[in-house]
Length: 77
Image 1: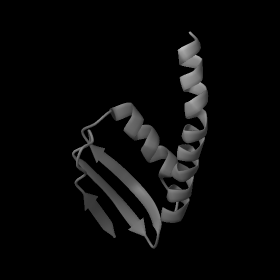
Image 2 (image 1 turned 30 degrees about the horizontal axis):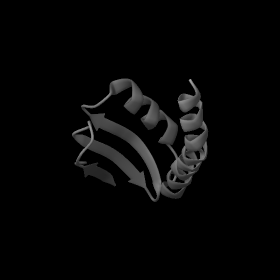
Image 3 (image 1 turned 90 degrees about the vertical axis):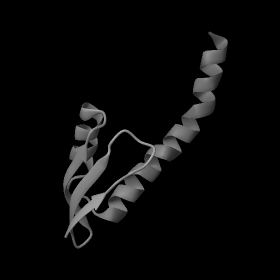
Image 4 (image 1 turned 180 degrees about the horizontal axis):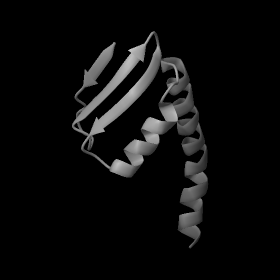
Protein backbone atom coordinates (compact mmCIF):
# COMPACT_ATOMS: atom_id res chain seq x y z
CA UNK A 1 0.00 0.00 0.00
CA UNK A 2 1.36 3.43 -0.93
CA UNK A 3 1.16 6.05 1.85
CA UNK A 4 1.58 9.82 1.77
CA UNK A 5 1.94 12.05 4.81
CA UNK A 6 2.23 15.82 5.12
CA UNK A 7 4.21 16.57 8.29
CA UNK A 8 4.00 19.87 10.16
CA UNK A 9 6.79 21.79 11.85
CA UNK A 10 9.65 20.03 10.04
CA UNK A 11 11.63 20.70 6.85
CA UNK A 12 10.19 18.00 4.57
CA UNK A 13 6.89 19.04 3.04
CA UNK A 14 5.84 15.47 2.23
CA UNK A 15 6.75 11.88 3.12
CA UNK A 16 5.86 8.97 0.87
CA UNK A 17 6.48 5.27 1.46
CA UNK A 18 5.12 1.82 0.71
CA UNK A 19 3.85 -0.60 3.33
CA UNK A 20 3.92 -4.32 2.57
CA UNK A 21 2.22 -5.71 5.65
CA UNK A 22 4.21 -3.80 8.26
CA UNK A 23 7.44 -3.53 6.23
CA UNK A 24 8.35 0.01 5.13
CA UNK A 25 10.00 0.47 1.71
CA UNK A 26 10.48 3.08 -1.03
CA UNK A 27 10.74 6.02 1.36
CA UNK A 28 10.79 9.42 -0.32
CA UNK A 29 10.93 12.85 1.28
CA UNK A 30 10.03 16.04 -0.57
CA UNK A 31 12.16 19.05 0.41
CA UNK A 32 14.19 19.07 3.63
CA UNK A 33 17.84 18.27 4.32
CA UNK A 34 18.71 15.96 1.45
CA UNK A 35 21.70 14.14 2.98
CA UNK A 36 20.06 13.47 6.33
CA UNK A 37 16.83 12.29 4.76
CA UNK A 38 18.64 9.98 2.33
CA UNK A 39 20.48 8.44 5.29
CA UNK A 40 17.27 8.07 7.27
CA UNK A 41 15.54 6.46 4.29
CA UNK A 42 18.41 4.02 3.79
CA UNK A 43 18.49 3.04 7.48
CA UNK A 44 14.80 2.23 7.81
CA UNK A 45 14.16 0.81 4.33
CA UNK A 46 13.05 -2.80 4.74
CA UNK A 47 12.41 -2.53 8.49
CA UNK A 48 9.07 -3.30 10.07
CA UNK A 49 7.16 -0.51 11.77
CA UNK A 50 8.00 -1.98 15.20
CA UNK A 51 11.70 -2.24 14.30
CA UNK A 52 11.72 1.44 13.32
CA UNK A 53 10.00 2.41 16.57
CA UNK A 54 12.50 0.36 18.61
CA UNK A 55 15.50 1.71 16.68
CA UNK A 56 14.61 5.35 17.30
CA UNK A 57 13.47 4.67 20.85
CA UNK A 58 16.96 3.33 21.59
CA UNK A 59 18.59 6.38 19.98
CA UNK A 60 16.48 8.68 22.17
CA UNK A 61 17.46 6.71 25.30
CA UNK A 62 21.14 7.14 24.46
CA UNK A 63 20.66 10.85 23.76
CA UNK A 64 18.91 11.33 27.11
CA UNK A 65 21.69 9.44 28.92
CA UNK A 66 24.38 11.54 27.25
CA UNK A 67 22.67 14.87 27.81
CA UNK A 68 23.92 15.47 31.40
CA UNK A 69 27.45 14.43 30.43
CA UNK A 70 27.50 16.77 27.47
CA UNK A 71 26.05 19.62 29.50
CA UNK A 72 28.68 19.09 32.20
CA UNK A 73 31.47 18.99 29.58
CA UNK A 74 30.30 22.24 28.00
CA UNK A 75 30.12 23.97 31.39
CA UNK A 76 33.71 22.93 32.20
CA UNK A 77 35.13 24.48 29.04
